[in-house]
Image (cartoon, rainbow, N blue to C red):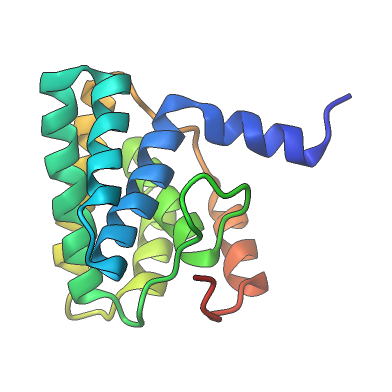
Length: 164
């Protein structure tokens, strides 16, 4: 029987989830530190998992999504350092948003958006997220579905404290 940690490690080791979670973390780290090194690491990850050409295309969609999300987020976004074995509220919502868009779960996607962005700017984030989600899906990198109940549970349990 596997433990919860083993199950989480297995989930986050899946390429689609790794592209979203580690891509988000590394791109955020580039903004937070002012260093291009995390962005170079993101480029390497995407090229390794998707190939050079498709990796560049998916990376452009990730960059647009994170840049839009950072600009439009209701509160400053949080993230763990890359390769961490934990996830914070904003990371869960990012995974939930991309997974919900890929699986046509509009209710769960709206829940994630509502918790991440102010209503006036949510449309911009939704468009950027949809483009990123569709790009990954087109490249056969679909995240596992995340039910709205799980997203609600995350929102009820999570705090907004800074984790980096």
